[in-house]
Amino acid sequence: MKKVSLLIVIIMISQYSYAANKVELRVGYLPILDHLTLLVSHAKDNDSFKQINITPRMFKAWRSMAGALKAGVIDSAFILSPLAMDLFNQGVNIKTILLAHRDGSAITIKNGSNINKSNDLQGKIIAIPDRKSTHTALLDQYLRQSDLSLQDVITRVIAPPNMLKAMSLGKIDAFIVAEPFGTKAQSKNIGKILVLTKDIIDNHVECIVIVNNDFLKTHSAGIQEWVN
View 1 (cartoon, rainbow, N blue to C red):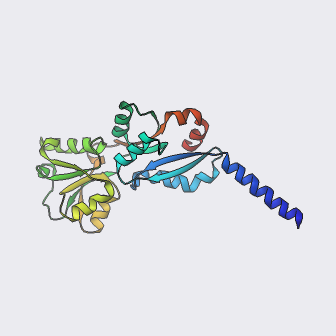
View 2 (cartoon, helix red, strand yellow):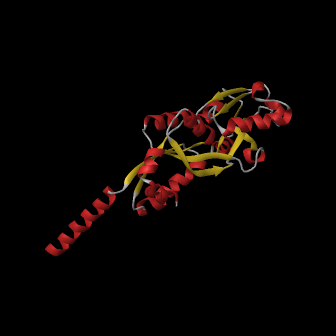
View 3 (cartoon, helix red, strand yellow):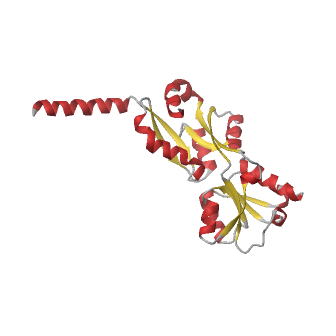
């Protein structure tokens, strides 16, 4: 019995030591389908990592996550590529390590709005996730199909999880954002998808994965293990 108890203690100590040797990587994400990769990987692979322990941190708004990066509250993030470039230009010490995904968003219009094509968006209030986003460029590109531009619509920055409520309250006529919010609007009979962003610019880059450069230099093997 003493030998069995000793064996259990040894196993517990070895497991604790194993976990203690893994460096924590705090990764920011938003509750959108584009970032599901992080959560699936965390559930499937994290326990098998030998050098790194991934801790997902959810944010509702892009600017909140950007602020957390600047403040050192998180070490890494799944983030809009234009927003990442803006942070880099501000001097934030980050480096791109992975392309997160392409496509995956849609322009969704309010039910009963009589919007059927790009020209019908003129003068409408359209929610965007951030000024520094692929979505802003995609919206502009879509409007240009009817010789319009962002100057011909009213854009409002709204956190993706809040867009459905804004539409249901009549505060916006449309929104452009990642799934699942377009599909949710349809299932709740609040809105309908007007166009998928892949049909505006096919195979467009949306989010990338960035990491604090000092963290990368210090724990490059752990980052490589995660990326692999």
